[in-house]
Amino acid sequence: MKHEKQVTLAITGASGAPYALTLLNSLVKADYQVYVLISSAAKVVFATEENLKIPSRPEDAAAFFTEKCAGKPGQISVFGKEEWFSPVASGSAAPAKMVVCPCSTGTLSSIAVGASDNLIERAADVVLKERGQLILVPREMPLSSIHLENMLKLSQMGATIMPAAPGFYHNPTTIDDLVDFVVARILDHLGIAQSLVARWGYQTAKHLEEEKCRR
Image (cartoon, rainbow, N blue to C red; front, side, top):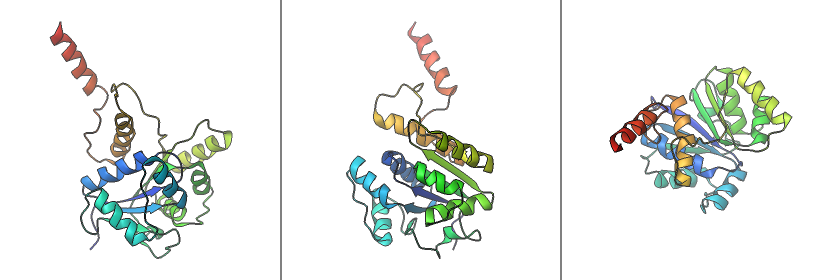
């Protein structure tokens, strides 16, 4: 039976494993069925930034993420880069929502030209052609003209470009606070309720009220 709340999460080799892990955990808590696509480079990043070794076999990786995020049986599925018969490879079965987090500039380029050389690129191509919601979270600096041109091209196609650039108005005190800021914005755009970070205005009003009470 098809789950009524589905999303595809692609994880590529840009720096930012904490963003991907926090986002996956949030999606699971929101009771979404998550199709995870993870590149070989992303596994290297996970080992470097999170000291986590992602199993090679998709089934083992799914079990790993399910345990890590306390997911329900079958809630997280992981597909290999050439599993062309997976749901995400076809417009008739793929979720209407997809996030690439973090998104390497190589993946950004491949999606922009419709390369579809692996399942991540194909899944993104499917979402674009079906007029679904595609959110790309690049983490790179500085940005070359090539990167900017690809972002503009994808934005004009309907994708949302959401760089992993956390704000500071929520007065972060830990790295997790900065990660939560970016993930909260992604969840907001997906239309998923989140309590990671208060939206602008609400937090400001609360802060002003606290200041007033202290006077």
